[in-house]
Image (cartoon, rainbow, N blue to C red; front, side, top):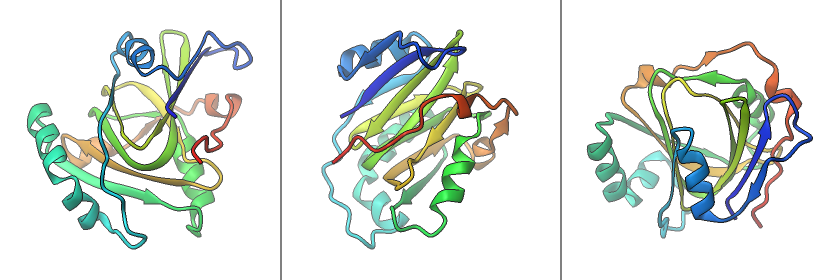
Length: 184
């Protein structure tokens, strides 16, 4: 189940908010400019479903979102626990960074955790199947796939160049609780 935990950015031992209520999650994230919505991801993905198959299954939703947001670029990230590069992938995503474009992700399988730093707080939002999150350009964040990653997310940006991460060099991600899958 989707889960939001908010901490002061200087104290990962202090929890300011801990909720699984979708409306409360959306309202809390809205306060920092992040859009969070619950959508319907009704299509089960086959074990061998590649990017083309995932995009075909969700073509109508993706097309609508791209038109509404003026987005031009889309891809799929699908990572499974048996991925031989899972440790390297996890480490890469863990570094705090920003993007020049909004980062929109629609989770269609599994789960992962976004950590958003804004206004002296860290918002840890565990996203799972059916969750759509839109992180505004310039928002400092990192993403944790967990030690045994299992997720598939459709990523939408204005352009591929907007996907380039600008790393802050801050080690904040090392100080906050890591993601361990909460999804059975």
